[in-house]
Length: 235
Length: 245
Image (cartoon, rainbow over all chains, first blue to last red; front, side):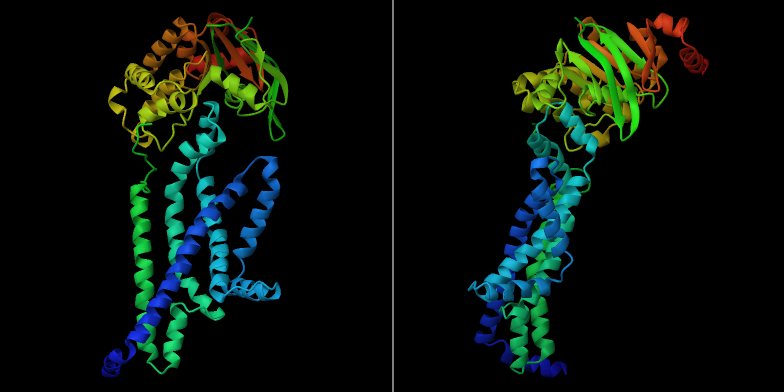
C-alpha cells in the first residue's frame, strides 16, 4: 500500500495539479483572511452595539442580538446555501466565490461579536465606575480602561475560533467554490488515491492555520494575556 | 454657604430604600465622618453624591450649585470638584502605579504631563510608595493599593474628597500615616467626607461624626458627643458595642 502511494506521488504532483492545489489553497486562505478581518471588525462593532446603554442605540442593539443569536444557531452550510440560492432568487448575479466571501464574513462576525462582548463584559464594573467618577468620557473609559483589560480575554478565544473557522471554509466546496476541500474532491475523482490527496489537503490546511495559531499566541504574550494588558507608554 | 449641602436624599437599590431622607451640610474645610453598622447606607451615600447611583429624591449641592444627576454636564462639573477613594481601591489593572495616578489629570483634565508626573511622584512618595511607581496593582498589597488610590484621588486636586473605608486594609502603622495625610488635607482646607469603622481614626480626625442606621442619620455631633455622650439609644448601643471590642 505504502509503495503504491509513494509511486503515485510524482503522478499527483504534476504542475497542473500543484497549480490547482495552490490556487485552491489561496482561495481557502483568502476566505479565511477576509472572514477573520471582516469578522473581527464587524464583530467588534456589533458587540459595542449590544453593550450600548443609550436608548438611542436600542433598535441597533435588538438587531445585533437577533443577528448574533440566529447566525450562531444556524449551521454554516445552511447559511451558505441561503446566501447562494437567495442571491439567485433576488437576481444578484454574483459568483459562488463572492457569495462564499459574504457568507463566511457574516458568520464569523456573529461568532466574534459574541466573544468580544463576553470579553468586554468580563471587565469589572468597578473599573468603569472608577473611570466615571474621574470624569472619563465613554470613549476614554473604553479606550484607556475597558479595552486594554478585555483584549487578553478576547484574543485567545478569537484565535481559537479563527483556527476552527479556517476548517469551516471547507463547506464552501458545497457551493462549488474551488477551495482546498473541493480541489481534493476533484483530484480524487480523477482517480488519484484518496489517502494521498486528502493527506496533501490536510498538510495545506495545517500550513495555513498553524501560523495563525502562533500569531494568536504571540499577541496573547505581547498583550500580557496571563495577567493584564500593559501598554508600554507611561501615559 | 455650605460646601456640600444634602437635602432629603433618598436612594434605592431595586425596591429597597437604602437612603431614606438624608440631610447633611458640610462646611468648606470640614471633616465629617459617617459611622454605623454595615448596610446602614454610608457607602451608598458616597456613591449617590459621586453620581454612581442616581437619587430617587432630594438634592445635593456642591459649592452652591445643585447637581442635576440626569444632566451629564452638571454631573461632569460636580465630578471636577470631587474625588472618591473606594473601599476596594478600584485601581486600573492595566496601568502601573504612576499611570494610575497620572491618567486622569493628563488625559481628562489636560494638565501638563511633566507637572503632573512631578506631583504624582511627590504624592506617591508622601504615601510611602516612591519605589513602586512601575508596579502593577496586582503586585501590591491591599494597603499599598489603598495608598495609591489616595494618591490618585489627591492628584485630581479635588475640593471635596470622599473616603470610603480607607483604613480597612491598612496595618496600624499605615493607619497612622493615612491619619497624618488626612490631617494635612484638612490643613489645606479640603472638605472631607469619610466612611470608616476605625473609631480611633474617626475620633481623632473628624470635626463632626454622623451615626447612620437604616438609611438615616440618627445622630450627628462632635466626636466627643458621639463617642462620649451619645443622645440616641441606637447610637449608644452601637458606640458601646464598638468601643467595648
